[in-house]
Amino acid sequence: MKEYRIDQELQKVMPELSEEDYKELENSLLKDGFKGSPIIVWGDIIIDGHNRYEICQKHGIPYEIKELSFDNKEEVIQWMVRAQLGRRNLTPLQRIKLVETYRPIYEKQAKDNKSANGGNKKAESEKSPTPKKPTKKIDVREELASDAGVSTNTYSKGKKILDSGNEELIRQVETGEKSINKAFKEIREEEAANSVPDSKNINSAQLDNNSYDVSYKKNQESLGQIKQRYEQYLATFTKDIDWLVAKDYIKDDEDVSSKYHSELQNCLEKFKGIKTLMENMEIDDLDGESIVIKK
Image (cartoon, rainbow, N blue to C red; front, side):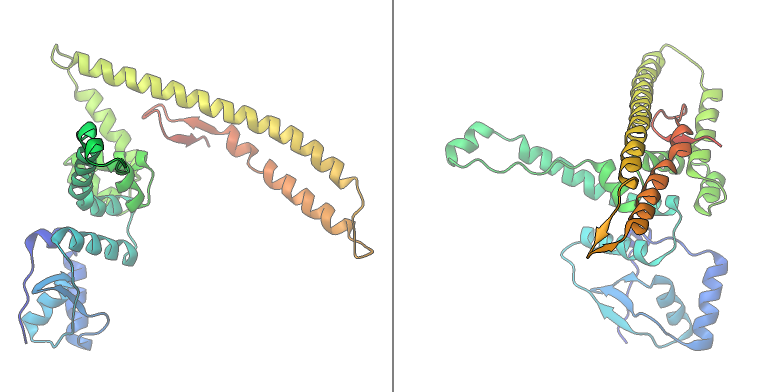
């Protein structure tokens, strides 16, 4: 049987199995043989099923291969990440860690698109009377957050946790023992406790604080306006429902008032149901972006 190889760069894309999980997989293959989906390869490179291939090779267990075609390694990485996101029950930080593999790809696309949009427009117009349609601008953070299935704010917090180098904290968040928000707060508090103001970073710190203040105040104002509009909508909607419920309803010469009165009242109750939620919403004073729900 043809031998295949494991590309070290591509192997890093895959979440590493714990020793316990690896041993469990090995025991399963030894007991039941190779089952399930085939090992996926690109040419002679394994892109899915690294661990199963390694175990099968070690013990001489027959396995199944399926070959896929890609134009380049970037396409392979994107396929690998999508496969993992769709297959595994991953925590938000694990998804962020996995999607971070896309960053160089999106950054390159963003750079290429920027260059395409910022060329010599006068020269281009002289060559062709029909101007080229501008290339879509790529927001790297938005693309990554969308792929990970989280908000851009949560993605930024997760990225900071991964960049912290605190392996124990990362492990706690990856396993779900600790939330991203709690871990992020701990990192910020530790940074604040360890920071020593000096002439080199005062200006940078001032800029960060100013940016935070503007964002926090803007979000506070927006949330306040939303709460105010909700109260106005609720008052108006209550009057409208009361008026509608006071009417009789006829359908096909049959009195169906009871049915529609009930449906209208249910609509009103659902709208009233978020009143407590709205009242308990606050802008997080830690990052100035998230909404905290008071207990």
